Amino acid sequence: MTANITSLVHVVRNAKRITVLTGAGVSAASGIPTFRGADGLWHRYRAEQLATPESFERDPKLVWEWYDWRRQKVATSQPNAAHRVLAAWSQRWPTCRIVTQNVDDLQLRAGTRDLVRLHGSIWEVSCWDRCAASPRYWRHEQVPLEELPPRCPHCGGLARPAVVWFGESLDPADVDAAQEAATTCSLFVSAGTSAVVYPAAAFLHEAKRHGATTAEINLEATPASDVVDMVVQGRAEEVLEQIEAALACGAS
Ligand code: NAD
Image (cartoon, rainbow, N blue to C red):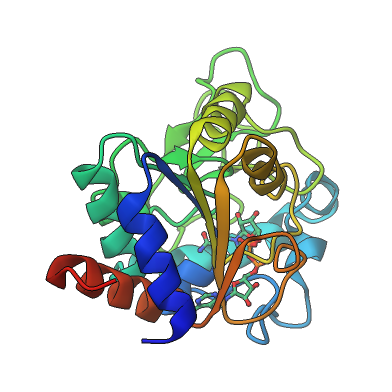
């Protein structure tokens, strides 16, 4: 165990209230590509070129082909050790909150309690035209999709993934929940996120401003690395598993 992990074990053990913000990196070990990693390209497109309302307006079939491909990856993947450890923390410590930017549902499948999902779920869709007859969103778990792009069953218009795209607003209730988790915790951990997508990236700063100890677990340096009190460079699934093992055996 590195000195940095040992320090993090110590603060985890002594924290009154922990909040963990997760990003695509915690699902990488489950085989789900991140947006900004080397495997972030789909065909010749970058995620930033596809995950926007403008792209959907221009070419809904292309955007849905990309989501169909991602949904197939998620459908065949399993939660990894990072998801399992964080789920265990959320169950063991009632004040521990997990806030995720991921849309893959793996943290839910691992059993995370009270998960805050800032960007929605890849398994939910909504009516592109927000027709009056349709609910805000509904589950649509067919993999692969038979019809591309899928249709709104209420008006026959286009359905869209009910996820938050670049340039769109988050659900205020989710922002409030994340804000509360960030401003009331004594330890804030940013894990597997490039820390460049706002407003999610702002919660670390909020936590710090409110006096929390802050830590980052990531393979690489990010803009958060210079801000946090502790940087643990490594794979989230390995680092979290080591922390969990040390907590279990009483080492610090
Ligand atoms: P990102 O792709 O921008 O960054 C991923 C980060 O994870 C990078 O900093 C990388 O160094 C790090 N990383 C990669 N493998 C890791 C590992 N094993 N352990 C620790 N760190 C690792 O992802 P982000 O910051 O979450 O970007 C935000 C957007 O990406 C969000 O809107 C989110 O909805 C979306 N997204 C979600 C998924 C998913 O649901 N699994 C996948 C890709 C992108």
